[in-house]
Length: 132
Image (cartoon, rainbow, N blue to C red; front, side):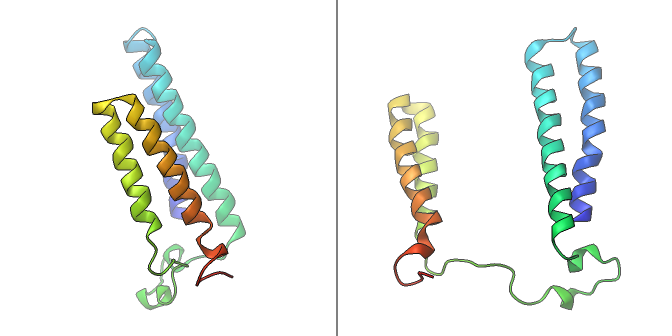
């Protein structure tokens, strides 16, 4: 996590510099300066989160400069077998993106379908064959 933390925290002063340069050149145009400032905040939050996570977990094989590929072998996470919820969530996202061209009434249908799909995916291990 140290590499990711450094990557994002190095981008904070870079985007601060870009924000200042853009602000002076554009005479502090409100939309662009606010967008770059929000980007600076987003990169800072991600870097701060990675720094907190890096302190709580053990070093990964990727963090070792002399690490071997074999050290990363084994389980990489917990994934739901035969899950249909990601497909439903993708269909909901497709409906929401289609709504940008068709009309906002379709966005609300896709959003409702997306909420149902997201809740189903989150609580997938709470019921059924793979319940814990």
